[in-house]
Image 1: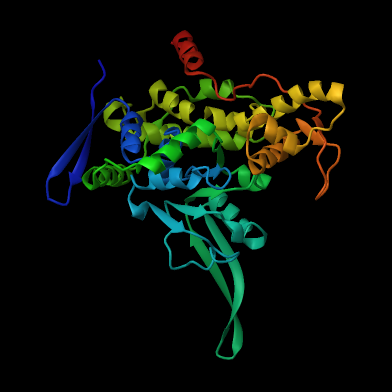
Image 2 (image 1 turned 180 degrees about the horizontal axis):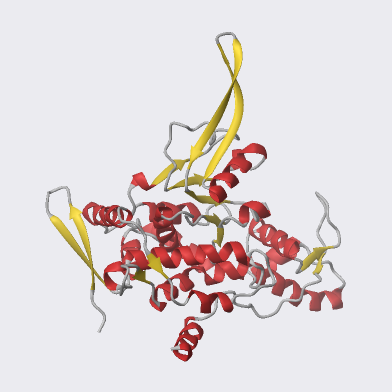
Length: 401
């Protein structure tokens, strides 16, 4: 029988020691407290952010980017997750100029995450280069000159990591070199979700989560991050053998998955068996947690799955194309907006993504022109999974055993 997970939390403000009983899955308990905090939407997004924030203890922290239009809730999801971790675990930057990061020698980035909302200043030039270097190599160096005593002297600026990144953006897509270093999480543009948000605003949704409970979670994080991660993944080879090899990006995504599994096992370490050398043994329960959080985003990142909002656009064009054959009218974005009952800006964003992916094309492109949308070279089919199901890994483990 599995042991009930008991998380020892150190002294609270009143000097007492607190124990959090969470059952066997910390993320399930976190989900309940996320709901209690007043968050409306898919709790898996702040759950993933929370889990990834704890990967800062590793040599290669997991980085995430939350993508969606303005008002979609990406910043709210990020801020909700941040409530449950100590502020010492991350460096919050609301905006930076191109070279601000490399000149931030007054900030400690080692084993922390940079939380950056809309990195517009780093979108081009050296800002992007510094960030890539920091995420990939665990440090960033920049040689420059400065005036001193009437002359010019060379100076080397150096940022020490390892460092992860949490970022939100309204951009449809990132530069491939940036995107390959992060897991991209698309915020679904769900009308039912928006209705819930509006109702909560009307009724004045309030948080029932106490400050003491938030402090308990932060103290738990401090306790977990004060201990070295020493985790083995016995099913790692089985998992690797079932990944697709048709896309180079999987070689960068897979380490993120392994890091999340190690982080999850470390957080559940008091409920995991240990090897003779003391290493925590990750279980399929850890993989299941990670799979549920990142399987869909990874499939979309490798273009094995089409985001739901983009699929809606493609299917609508396909349906309207049948009617257009009879009427001869072009399929414009305005036509799509009326057909779907969606705002024009939302439709425009999703059309652009569908064209980028190759599922649609515009026969009349150009600013100020009415679009004439057609189906593209790619045919919309069933989504394909990048990560294997837990049952497939379990089945192979039984055969090997």
